[in-house]
Picture 1 (cartoon, helix red, strand yellow):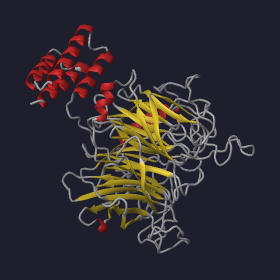
Picture 2: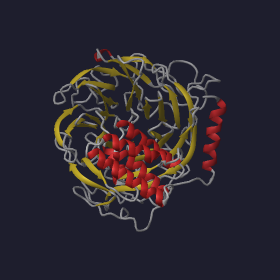
Picture 3: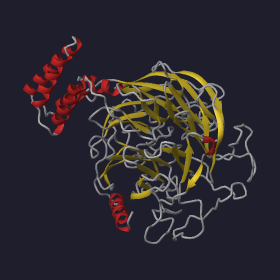
Picture 4: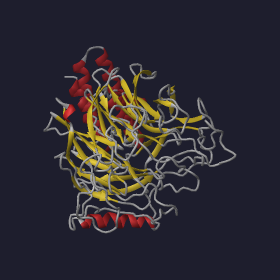
Length: 602
């Protein structure tokens, strides 16, 4: 990215900081049932709108422990076939979801090391390990000392061809361990898969892992040596021999192209204060990324990198190139990124407080610990459009801040379901990035175990818990609840989500899912898909009454013809209905859906 583009981004962020009026999602309503929920644990109290909790599977041994014990908390989720893999600081668990509304724990694999984020690709499972207690042999006895030959910090690799008996392969050690990782694929290289590793913790001694080099976080330009900071790790995994996976490059994606400084993006050093008057937490010094999310359809990656949001060109996955970067002093820690389905919008999240603090209080501004919504131009430049934050005020006893989300695949719309730790989940339509709208939510009261809330000795005590991530997979929303286990949710129809739209989303079938490897959804033409576009044209007001009635009748008649086996007649009816509509706007989308459906009938 050029210095000019960086200046543009910083200038825009500075304007936000000094009080420019920008669109923010609606403030909390005084009658919101999420406000003031009573403390509890299992089952606890809850409030919901347009989504319901249909199943909860509490943690069991050896993954159960009182809330707040980070040795045992659930972390991220991945899906393969009819199984959900739930990561944990203590290993991972596999749930059978062949009955989607009733997951059953099938197996557990103890392998401590935190934070245990997981991804799947074919018969391989990748797992992030950053803590010094992580061991090569997955033992629970820890790895004491500054230098320990038994220590493992990096990306574990498992053969999961038999999910009940995973086999650990050598994996890849890295200098800062692995906080998160992302699968990146290359359509021209089907024999390999790439893993972009983000390490956020301390740098290992070179006596433990050769090549590690710690450097001070400084405001001055860093241009010499080979410091472990200010880079990511690119791991190449040969699919025919995954045991030979290795780091093949360590691109310095934050470098200033003009000066050559490795630390070329925003560096907020100790002493700088967040607009709230508190210290940035975690410190956004942009010396690594927290999460990057691949969008293989465009060979792009959106990176949430401490003090910056960035866009990378990954057409050469070994040598990614930074295309744009943005910053915002309201953001304490750029945490994760999610694309819309056509790769023209990006939502970045801010994990202000690191996920362990109460950041959804009445005193917290809606642009702090929130989402920032951007449009992405054809030239891959980001333009800020609005902030969005879960609107219901939470208590001082609930860790709450923006966290992991995924797309709900409704054709013609951009919808996400997002976790907010003890703020629950929120379903948001961001089709208009300047005006995101919450359309569903679920929330529980604060966790009161193992101590009651309020604690007389510490009224601000937080018993850590809440939803780490909420992901849509083959018709259901699954949530990894830090303290309570695996949650399963069912979206409901409403004024904001029609039966056709929900049915069309549920027709999308995936064989694997990783939130940070965001595959583009292509909908198979169907009456539900056409009906979804019809409902959207009605909702927007584009279909006038007469046209609405005639189109609905033609759709109904065509469906009856198909049911009766008269496919040619149905095809003719659908093409006639399409021909009566213009080619632009919501009616144009409907016209295309009707045409696609007709052509799919032969």
